Image 1: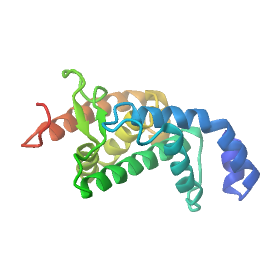
Image 2: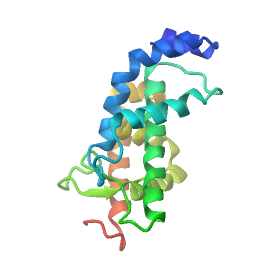
Image 3: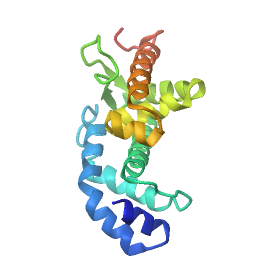
Amino acid sequence: MTQLLLRWNSGDEEARASLMEHVYPELRTIAARHLANEKHPGELQPGALVNEAYLRLIDLNRIQWQDRAHFLAMASRIMRELLVDEARKRLSAKRDGGIQVTLSGLSGSNNDPNTDVLALHEALQRLGAIDSQRAHLVELRFFGGLTIEETAEVLNISPATVKRSWAVARGWLYREINKGDTGFPR
C-alpha cells in the first residue's frame, strides 16, 4: 500500500485506482464505525460515506502520502467532517438535529452515553486549541480506529506516550461534552 501511495504522489493515476481497490474494505469499516450509532439510520450508508470521502481525498493534491496509517487517518478525518456537515444541515433545517455517536471509547466510567457529533466536534476543536497533538490522537484512535502502535507511528511518539495521552484526552473530552446545560447525560 505504501508503494501505491508513493506512486500516487508521483501522479500515477493507475496507482490511485489500484490503491482504492485495496483499501476500500478498510474504508468501509471506518465508515461503518462512524455511522454505528447514527441517530437517523438509513440516511447515510457506509458506501456513500466512503464515496464522498474518496472524492475529497483525490482532491488533496498537496498531501504527500506517507503510509497506510496516514492515508486511513486522513480518510477518517474527512468522514468525520462529512458527518459534521450533515449534522449542521439537519440543524439548520430545524430538525431534531444531530448524528449520534457513542463515546464508549472515551469514557471508562459511563455506560455508552450517546453524544451529538457536533458536541464532540466542538470539544475536539477546543482540545485542539489547547493541545493539537492530543486532538489528533483522538481522531486517529476514536475515528480512525488506529491501534496504539499505529497511532504512535503516525505521531512519531512512543506507544506508552500514546496510552497516557489517550487516557488524558478521553477524560478531558468526556468532561467537556458533559459539562454545562448541554442536554447530555452527566
